[in-house]
Image 1 (cartoon, one colour):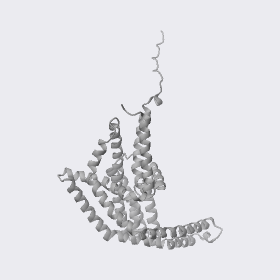
Image 2: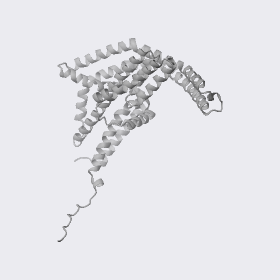
Image 3: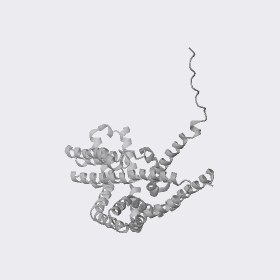
Image 4: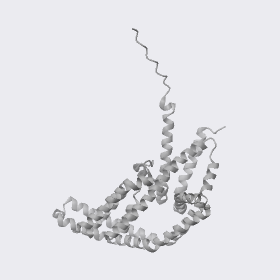
Length: 361
């Protein structure tokens, strides 16, 4: 005999509370394992494809690991040093850029010289905020760099965790399936399949879109000659998973930097703007339809809300698990809505309408 619904809800409630408490207390401790699990989930279809080609699971995982290692070495030697250098230069030059902006606006809008001008007061307020927050940002970066051992440990543990999880992925899924409650196993499998489809479309599809667009933006901006093109391109590609935000913020930052660097050279400024316009066309008409599909199931507003809440509560780890949890909650909400629409609570107990009587002739 199955357990009463109230008892089952109690057990699942305890499990949910335990999950959130685990995120709350462990935090950064489980970061390598969350990253490793995300990488394994991302690469599992590749391993399955190699297995269908005739390779064993061990050989498939080894091939993937060797290719990933080669990519990491190339990135570490060529891309990462340049990215770090440009980021540091951008942080250092930010106050000068603001001063140049103030001088530029003052030359073209003389009313800014007036101390009582609202716009001038706003600029002064923004400048003070940048100076205050900029110092805090630099201190945070320096404190993070000082804990180099944590970064090294992260770089060592994450690949190891990803390797073993990827190797045992199918076995773990089968074991979890074996432990499902027998009465609810079909429904859980159905919901898990919908959650997997949503995550596959979003994480794997949008992850590939972010990678392609980030590479395109970075290479194109560097070819144009933008001073911080690699940083801007990487930033725009990284936040592309939020629709329109990546192109808007990245485009605004790139065009702003281009105005300072290429003022008077309108061709170069137009090229920078055109790069983001072409990127938007590629994303909307080619990349997203091909790699993500038309039905992702994660509304942008819901996604931003989940990222904000989980980031505020659990930090960086919370932001990593926000997308899977948001996808799961979305699927469960749609399932609950379907159950409600088919229940007596929604339909009521009204008797069927009587057949209309025919008028006597």
